Structure formats: C-alpha cells, structure tokens
Image 1 (tube, rainbow, N blue to C red):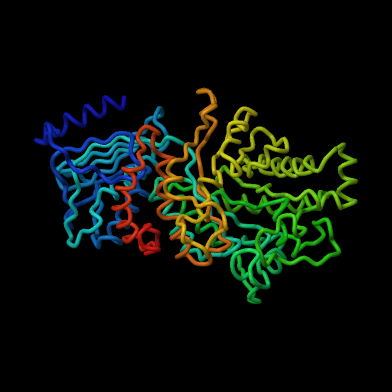
Image 2 (image 1 turned 90 degrees about the horizontal axis):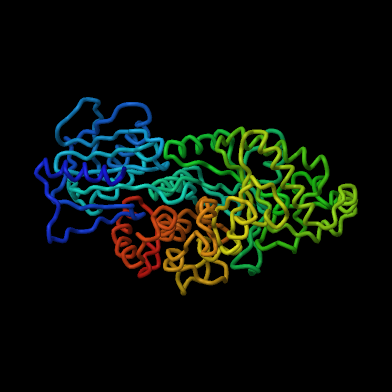
Amino acid sequence: MKRFRMMLLTILFCVMGTNMIMGQQMPAPQIIPEPVSVQVVIGKFTVNPETVIRASGAGVDNSVNYLREYISNCYGLSLEQSKKKAKANCIVLEIKKDKKAVEGAYSLSVSPHTITITGYNESGLFYGVQTLIQLLPVDSKDKNLNIQAIVIEDEPRFEYRGMHLDVVRHIFPIEYIKKYIDYIALHKMNYFHWHLTDDQGWRMESKSHPRLNEYGAYRESTIIGVFPGTGVDHTRYGGYYTIEEMKEVVEYATKRYVTVVPEIDVPGHSMAILAAYPEFGTEPDKETKPATTWNIYNRQNNVLAPREETFQFLEDVFNELMDVFPGKYIHIGADECAFMWWKQDPLTQQFMKEHNMTDEAQVQAYFSKRIHETVSKRGRVALGWDEIIDHDAPKDMIPLVWRDARSAAKAVKDGYYVIQTPMKYCYLNAKQREDEKDITYPMAMTSIDKVYGFELIPENLAEDEQSRILGGQGCMWTEYYESPERIDYSVLPRMSALSEVFWSRKENRDLEKFKVKLQSQFLRYDLWGAHYCDFERRAR
C-alpha cells in the first residue's frame, strides 16, 4: 500500500513538470527522527505572506492551529486558513483514515505549487506537521521560506514514546511544563510522565487530604552541593499544582497528541505523605518532615504501613488523580522500598501473619495489587517501576524497566508488556560531558553516542515476543536541576537522540548522519528559545 502511494506521488511530480533527480545529489533533509522513506526531487515551494492553509473536516484543527502558531512565533508570518480549493501556494492538511495504518502514520509531499500532508489518523497529521516544521529554513532572514520538494512516507516504530519530568526535587512553573510538552511534541513523542510525589514533596492539590499540601508540599531546606553535600540552605522550598493548573496542562498536552501519565510514588518514597499523615507510616508517633536531601533509601523511614486506613487513603488520592488525568496510564511508583522498616514494625509483622506472608516482598506486592484494583476499576492501566516484577505484580500492570535494559526480556517472558527506560541509556540527569561536575550524580557519563546506540528490543526475544516492548522513555530527575535552563541543557540534544531511537526503524538509524542533522537541530533549538548542550560550548 505504501509503495503504491509512493508511486502515485512520484507520477504526480512528473505530471507537474518536476522530475526525479538523475545522477544529481540533492541536499539531504535534516529530519529528526529519521522517516521511514524520503525521496528528494527537483524544485522548491516558497512559503510567503500569501500562502494559505487549506484544511477542513473533523480532526484537523489541532494540527492547523499548531502550524499557524509555530510559523507566526518563529518566522513572523500569519498564514490564513481557507476551506476553498486552491491550485497553488497552499498547504493542504487532510485526514484520510486508514484502519490498517499505524497510529501516527502520515505522508508528506512538497511540490513547487503545493504542500500536502495526509494523516492516516489525527496524530499522523500532527506528526506530518512536525516534519514540515523541520523542512522550514532555520536561518531565514526574510518572509520567503523556501522548502525543498520532497516525498515522505512515515510511521513510528514504537507506540509509547515518552519523556519524564520530576517536579518534586525541584518544582517548575506551569509555563515551563507546557514548553517541555512542546519539546515532546516537536520530537514526535506522545507521553509525558509527570512525577508528582516523592520524599521531598507532594505536588498535586488534594481536596480529600488537604494536609498533603499544607505539610507535605514544602520542605524546610535543601541540601547544598552534590550528595552528601556540605549542609543545607535553611530556605523553605516547595509548592504544588492546583487542580485547575493540572487540567490546563492536560488540555494543552491533548492538543499536541501527548498523553499525561501522572505518578504517585508509593509505598516507599513517602516522607511527604508521612509529614502530613504520620498515622499511615510504621512509626505513627514520630514526627516526619519532607526530606531535605536526596538518596535517603535505607537511611530514613519513608515507607507506608500496610493498614486498612492506609489503603483507603491511597484509594482516595488515586481516585483524585484519575479525576484530573483522563489518560489510560496511571503510574503507582513502587520502587526502592526499604523492607527494613517493615521488618522492624510489629504491626506489619502481624499483618504478614494474618495474610500468610513469608517475607516483606509480599507486602510490597500487596500494595501494588490494592492500588491496581483501584486503578482498574476506573478502566485504567497501572504502570510501575520495574521492582513490581520482582514481587508478583498482576500481569496487566506494565513495568518501566529502569535498572537494567536486559530485565526487559525476562519481564516479557514472564508475561508483561514493557516500557524501556534503563538508567544507563535513558536517564538524562547523568552527565553528558566529562567536565560536568556540579549538576549531576557521580555516575557514568551518558553521552549522545550512548543514548543513540540504545536498542529497545533485547537480542534474546523471539519475533512473536518483540511486540510486547511497547516503547521507551527518557527520564529527567531534578535533584541538581533547579531551573528550566538546566533542564533544557540536560535534555537537549539527548532527547532528539531518543526520539530517533523510539520512532525510526533500526536500519534507518545512523549515528554519523544524526550528528550532521544535529547542526540544523541546534538552530531550531535557537528558534525555540531553548538552552542546550552543543558539545563544543558548555551551553547556549
């Protein structure tokens, strides 16, 4: 079917007087992520103040509005939208639904007279717009934007293409959250994992348990320097997002075909919860406050106690979460739970006896199953960090494999669908240059080469098992990233590398070609007002 469409488009160019290049090398388009197929032809289309966007029908508005806003913001051109047919100087956006097409599939053709983007579903049209954006000149100084004539057929390799952001260790304004979502959309990614709770703070407004915001959302101080640090700054820090703000983010993301995946991280990483409600912990008579430092695993008691009132609390707050976030995925955390606190707690030990449990791992599994029930009742799918597969999680939960990419194969063979986000390749808080000392953990460098070289499908999976790898996700933990500028610097350009790993076919990926494309991508970052690492200068 695709080959047939390509033949038709090629014939169309010939009819219009545009020939395929014979023995002549045309400039390669600088498109990230690399499309499935690209054919460059002779000629160019010029976007100018008279160019119109022609689009009509259901599902086109998000793509039309995004394209108009992008060209206006980056180039100062205000393109009119028209439903009337035009023979020349128009950009045609259309949806031709194809039930057999992959979600996100599109075709794009540029001739001297017309640009046509055909989405085979709504998101496909939007991704076609993202490709057109990358065909626009990045250094134009006038109102005429020349675009190389070209024919593209494209679709994503993986369904889940995500980016994560931790807003607990440091919180960021809603306007930056929107900008981060724009980065996701511009890279043809489609999931935003929003890490909203942890030991250092509770970042979502709760109506059912308001003490979470009064006592759990603010820490008394913050560690100075890289852990273990040189002390704390004695400055109160924190905040939370209101229900209205979170709904605003959901609406903004939806228009960019990005689904928000919210996370409440339990039963470990719960010091902010215990600061508000100590009765849900294993030491209810002990005062707890949100953590002022990082790396507290096994150092401070931060686990919830397996009591019925605790599970009722979790049911309340997860239902609140699902009232705000309509996406199918809800992340329950379930990582780095220190069993030592349960071993020391007589009530937990009594709970284990009553439930015929032989070790604390079964307590962890019980938490996952109870929250899974709450999430499933609302028709949602529970995600968790890959510790869930250590403790017999329900098979319809989805682990995000972060500790070791090789664990994905075991999870698949155990019957799970999997999202790959291994720390070695996908944690963008790791340094990307050898001279970085103050903004990262003292961990191995995650260079652009390493990120780009990651392959999501483990070698030892049979062909019929490979479809259980749903995709991948980049993670941005913010212990040492207190400003939007530092976030930008850390994710760009490694986010561009991940986008190609998640979208492009393995045989179409080429590191050296990607690095050439980055030179144009850096100029696009400039258009976006982004602060990034270009590897020759520390940041721009």
